[in-house]
Image (cartoon, rainbow, N blue to C red; front, side, top):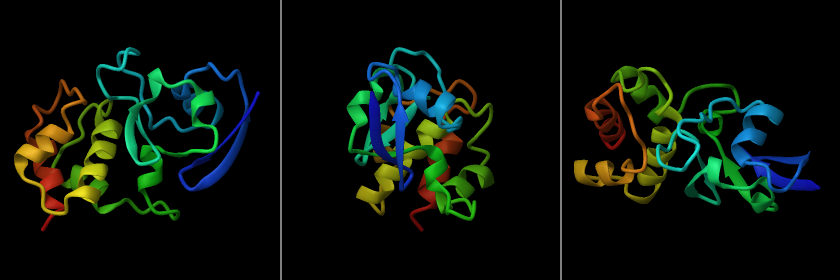
Length: 151
């Protein structure tokens, strides 16, 4: 089947079984390897993408479900010229990215939060990131990075 959707602001059309995981199509067919596979069960958030502005675990989404929709991966946070977003830069500056597996999901969840609440509290950041597991950072640096984007 042909699936058409917008990926990081660019229309795409792909031939694929509609039941294939969006995660696999993004990584294997479209080269968007920023989206990571962690648990494969929708528990860790490593594969998070935005579909029509909502955080979704791409390991649980069939590619056929994104027909006509807007998908944003971590690559889509940067400017077209490759310049990192303020949030991505904050993760670097605060040492919030260590092994990198959770980073894409954390960035996308934080991106949505900052779009909805320009001055979130630490508790709001923790709640927004609750669907993303990290085994390296202890979350403190990630929260600090997100909060630094509010000043």
